[in-house]
Amino acid sequence: MKKLPIAIIAISLAAISARAQTFADPSVSNYWYAVETGYNTSGFTGENYINPVTVSGGYLSAPLPVNGPPSGDNVSSVLNWIFVYDDGTTNTESLYNGSLIGNLSAQTAFTATFRLTLSTPAGSTLDPSQMWYETGGAPPTVRFLFEAYDPLLYASTGVTPDLHWWSNPGAVDLTTMANGQDYTLTVNLDPALWSDDYGLNGTNDVAGFDYTLANVLDSGLSFGAGDGFQNGVALMPGVTGSFDLGNLTTVPEPTSLALVALGLGGLVLIRRRK
Image (cartoon, rainbow, N blue to C red):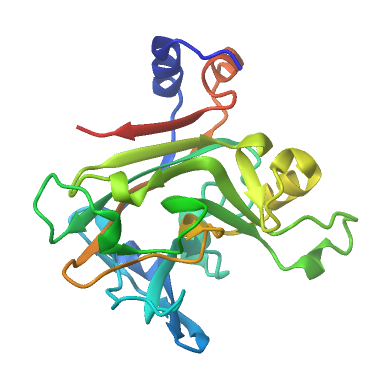
């Protein structure tokens, strides 16, 4: 694919208004969840849903679990994902319906700004030995995830899509993020830039991708490595910190379709914020 001049991409993004969830209002903490999974030497021990999460200073903060050296692939806990969920309440749906949950068919991209806040010296990055993650395959990353409603609801549609879609390859390697530095990840809602629970690219199930996008139950950021985008990450002893989300946004259809064609077709954009 021919790369676009940076100036064209910048113009296109600036011309598109976005519906963002910022975290200037701490009261939204009740609508957001962080998920940690627990392990011991025998394997999986369960999930811990953290709600409400901590919201202060304009960021949603999820503590990164700290673990000892793993026994095989087993650690005490890992952070798997941060998300907003359609719980059916008026408050949640009035805030997020059509932008982060519900029918997102009119949206063209997800974008989020986030940072790591660590006990390591300011401006440094994590040494890979300071973070637990499944080795082999993908490095420890954060990426977008959205999911649809219960498959029983598909019975009348004749569509049986997979429920889970991860941005792929659109992700940020956590061990390359400078401490306290904001990063912005933007991924177009083009099926070619997403993969499902079976690892299949969205172009293999466009109908399923579109159906899921029209019936979003939850959306957010997913953490994983190795052969899993949601199998979680943790810090090793000697480092403490949190993953802080500054905003999570969807980008609606702009008034100028020409700008979509120029600027967002197949776009994955990672920006380090100054």
